[in-house]
Image (cartoon, rainbow, N blue to C red; front, side, top):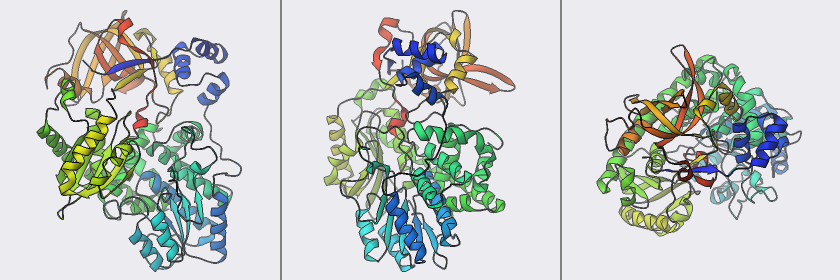
Length: 615
């Protein structure tokens, strides 16, 4: 029924045996760790006991050059501005470095705008300025007397804008975590982990977010960092979908239990607005409750946009923090409404081009999904493109057309496709574009949209067809799905990019009951195997399974059916009842074991898609 192939990680019996014997691990935990490459008992022990320690002396490439510029600026009493980005990472990095520069001696902190004070900050408008350094903003800052421009979470590819800043007599310090271009911008200092020797050879285990880079510069300036800064950087690490391994995993693991008592008034107020006050938070709360509200300010432009988020995390006044947290919540509701509207119109546009109802018809769809609409809000284009890409499992581009005939779009891919390479083949149809393999933005004229659609489909088709997979790390019986297994899974937390929640498989389960809940959106099952009964929930799977069954209302399974379930075990509490349940990833009719699973599957992390990075 699912149409999705299942793969089981290649067995490593010798490594699993060493882990079980040396560390006393269960079969399943040892199998999961071995599947993820943690085959050495010492490395596995360290992974299971994450800790975070800042290096005695930060060694990021370019940090000494940055310190030299900043120290000289302080001696010469120069005016400094921090230039950030409008997402969580940029907001956190701006807050941290701005406070660090103030503490270092650059004078009273102030909000964006003209007027006295030595230290400024600027967050661009998503709808007006776009991502990264903006020429008009650079001119405005120069006219306002800024002499030293320090970027956070951006700037490493802004050659033209940095040349402009230099022409106004500014010194520029770039702090960024994005991969640099072949030709670096002419800044006085570039702090970027990718510039370390050999850093570009293969994926790095602990790529830092922009806020972590800013934190290390702050530490180099002051010799120490504030606890509140660690909270913000942990939030940014999760929100920016950098790998949750190494130092990143250590930071998030150590800060999560402490966030409910954070000393940052703005973060405390936001946690309260999310209904999470007093609770121990996990990475899911950060990614899907806190981060969307911060990002929403930049998406919909409410108030001062993302600058209000910097104000929220910089204020020491609880009343101001609460007001700004309310504004974030309001912006998020606006974002949800805009997203729902654009998503509905985008799906209607896809339907107008051909069948979209079932996976069986997927072969009739174009190689890429391209939809356009007049006046669609640019702040939600990337989110809608992500939804389309995930639903149809092919690259998707969503384009908003302005009244003057200009158009801008966001595109997202799925694992297996390289979106940036595809856009290179379409560059003759585009006015501008940029991005990476899984996410990109572009601009073009309305009259070129049809040609762009044709070119993109041709370019994607040339990359071949890439199936959707569920990667299982172990096969278990329902009898093994107990409290110990839940605790074993929790030892791998926090989950995120490069460290996803383990997906296990239970084969040949009998369906005792099946129903759709949550207005038909979710699938609720009761399963039995060898006398053991477990409840299962598939979020978002009620609608999916109904479509696959060809009915909008029929239950996808009937009592007595035999199915295979791919899931993550968890403890669920509801109405005073606490029990172990299966959080479903996929379900399908039971298949003979020897034919049911493709061997040698790679652990595929949804974070590889980096869909959460909505530039």
